[in-house]
Image (cartoon, rainbow, N blue to C red; front, side):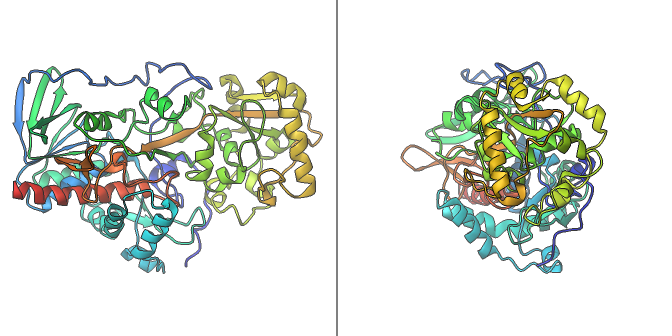
Length: 542
């Protein structure tokens, strides 16, 4: 097993280029305000739900397979269908162009048994990956589907190579015990795939949100979409839906998560259209719901700075110090958010509409000249910090002032004053109890690893509370399918001609996020390929 890559100074540019070890994320964020906003803003409008009846078409097109969505699952499904010799493959998408998708922005994907991994000395196998994922999911997913998807992970990277998208092996940032994440060394992989797929005969219809699946005698026979003023019926022998989830649909997120507001760090186009039209066509929802949580740093909708050029004080959410709920009480083992932000740590934040990181002024000021990671002794148990949080906070004074100006950083002369300022009524007692744990060297409440027990009250002249919202890159979960990604009806029978792949496939993902970096990407890609192979066979037999 190779060690993780040498620590590098974390920057958002490094992240977007895929150069930071073990990073995985998606670009874009909804600019929404407040700890618990009551509605969306003009920057992030909710899409038309499309629940109106079918319209009279102004145009009709023909295809053998129509793929709804041009993300990771859609592009790889189109590749697989074209390679299988399907006559006409049409990708219909609400995206405006090849780079307008989460797929274009992801910086890494999971794989095993690749040439790069073998060169790195990694011996983790397909069988081990499947067992690792299946055990983590506790058999809540479709075991046969997951098995197929994991078996395709190695060849996913071969297809990236064929499309001219270069990858590099990233480090084991979360100490899972094996290397698997392949980071992309360039940008705009969507353009590579558009060119490659077009050369294979695949056609794209952009700016054309699909509003309904066309059905006939219980079979899916196409889709209806709207492109400008045109209403287009696309007649097809098979339909694949893979539109990327519903994180941009604030109303649906609130409904699924008990009113919790989640900052969207993914595409504003992921509004749940795919799930809606599949359920409308007779599909049934699977019970698993989850999110690919933000694993870079905290986020607050009040911030006016873009996600990947975020205020560095957003990092403090992930430092493993004292975190409280809006009443001022601890609600989690903070080390989980520091070391496992996409899994259990991020999941815990979804229980709170906002949460607070509490620090003394002395501790905060020390970050001006040296990183927090170093200040607490560079603990070996915090491997992600070696690549993410290994530098002093940039433009310290200006960014701290900006955080206060935007209203997500609070400063007071004492813990009691801070509690009054923020409304964290129980904070004084929480800090007292926490500091007693620090002095004893043992977290008596949540059993946090001792390296992260750092004092709060330390005779500082002031104390800070930094406010954060839960934040995520994508949702996962949706309609139930079988091992061929065929959508199942209420009787657990496949709906002929209708398939679902990607993060909207409700039978493939567990909650919380798999303990494997790049899972959403890797499994979405593979599921698109599984669906395409099944569709090709279905079309050829039709």
